Length: 327
Image: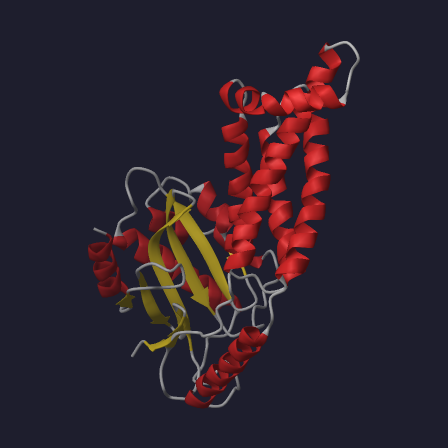
């Protein structure tokens, strides 16, 4: 269905359907009135939307930071393009002015906007750009030299760039990758950073849970985030050892915090308070108290979610930009 919409949108706007646009999914990409544009039916955090990109010459916007919002708020053309009684508030709210373009998103739930409506909105956005910014002329956006090679996509984003600049960027990417590959991981430093951070977090986790008399699950996500960050800082270059270390220390830290919570709670209920004997007894019954009668599994899950997020964000960098010709 999405592919049929893209084909129809391309027919209406003289754009080209591509397999991967600016939002890393199929899109219609090309140029309108000299402005590189892209539009796609996409998803963001499980919400469906139509995404728009209109690019102009960098730094050429002359209507001020509020000019785009002013254009949209009073635009009868935009209302007519959406086919609504009023322009959707979510679309207006998403309008973003960048140094070299306009981005906005049109959320929808059950029924996706038709290609005719998407084409209409895209043309109106191009009209906004034409009012206050210069088109991307036949000069390379990187070096400013004249080029007649036509538009390219750089990781899905439509750009005008010459062959020498593409070759130069490829060489820079190659050198950056070589420099990154030459970095040495330091797992011992990562272990030290992680162990110290984990010990502090376990005490804070157990102590806070004791004070408020319950396990605060969002704190488990914080533990995972903090541990992953600390290990990454210590290792400098995270590899598979660092990732395994992050998961292991996250599990150990949450379990230690849960144990301290159980121990402190038990000490409050028995005569004599905190003692070595009570600590040993709490350790013997820890699994039963934390996993059979408590929320141990949920705490671990939330902590691993936090650690997984940081590991995803800090995944090895991608150096090479993928260029594909649009003409």
